[in-house]
Image (cartoon, rainbow, N blue to C red):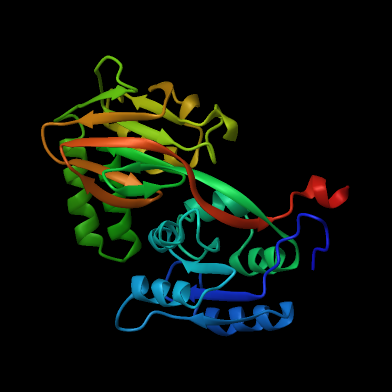
Length: 298
């Protein structure tokens, strides 16, 4: 265990596992129990029952752990971080899903077992900022507008619902240019765009964590090929490098549309109201991450 002056003392760990999620694995519960035992910490490993994942997360938090570790999909990772908040226990949203947007931003290409082993051996606390839009939080990126429609097709394909995936892909293509967003950043002038992406300092290549704002990227795809590219790939890449992107910064803002706004928050599809306010959250939750290699070497 880390014995340095900034070491994080972890005595009690609660692990929430969804064995059915993308990359958790059917033996995830037993594997997590073994990792806890080898690390010499007490706690329990929970899998969702009939009440579902949210109830499982609440039970884990009610147990009063020093660390809540989550091995599940993006939606569960986001829900656990939000439930813990800035004043709750440390959270480890480990890569147990398909896209693993938040886990990827925090743990890189580690799998969930190596990430959990590393943070229990020598983890450091990392304050994580985020954003909020119409009461829903995100910690990596929010996509508003037509590219978000492709996420629904992707989700259907991932679940093996091929007919539904095809229908949703056709709908996404049909609706790609049927409506445009209007948005305003920090009370500024209204602008039109095909889609809007809000990125947190955790992943933005234009922001430092001390900047205290979101990066807002206005996307204006001119054809179906660009919509397809943005909808499927840009959430995991560098938005600023795309020729259809005009980026800026904000602490708060508003988006308008003629109807409800399709969106993706940290990889999870959702639908927002026709007028949706968003804001930067300087302190969203505290993550437990591996000590940086530069500090370990020193």
